[in-house]
Image (cartoon, rainbow, N blue to C red; front, side):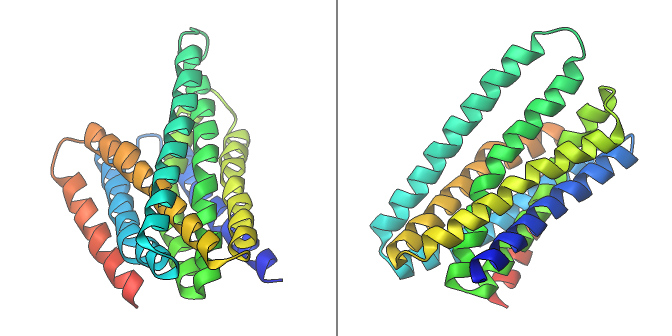
Length: 244
């Protein structure tokens, strides 16, 4: 019953964030780069707090620092391979001239579906440690999924896809969060060492998403101070959230 509840919570939070982002992307024709930059940097600060003050400390406490580092490295390496796979697909498709914007949106949705699995794993592993950690991770991930939903919906909508189909793709990309939460809940029941590795893996995956995607994309979208401000606000709110 607990595994089912964890999976459903992961599914809800994973699909809720991306769907909200998808609705925003479909509703507003001109979402400013400044706003997107702030949201991305805010999400990155929030996730860094979760990584630093929840995932890694819990992982080390359950096992030891070596196990935690192994999990972190495994998470980073996995995300690098996921990124390379998506970029290769993206480069192949953007060479095609017909409806390239639509293809770009679809490739982004594939990438986000891949990225959402370790996020679900973080939720599932977090609930194995405590309900508070699991819910904290779920909320943080949900918030960071909103700009991802926007980034997916805008090119697909502008590429001519019907709105209902755009929202369907956005919704489906979040389903892998629920699958990851199920995997994390099942794996976490085996032993504390497995939970520690899973938490380390999730921390590494999220660290790569923050360092390799959210922060660079935020700075690319807008060159002003708003990205730094968003990052700091997100980090401070994350500290408060993890210690309540």
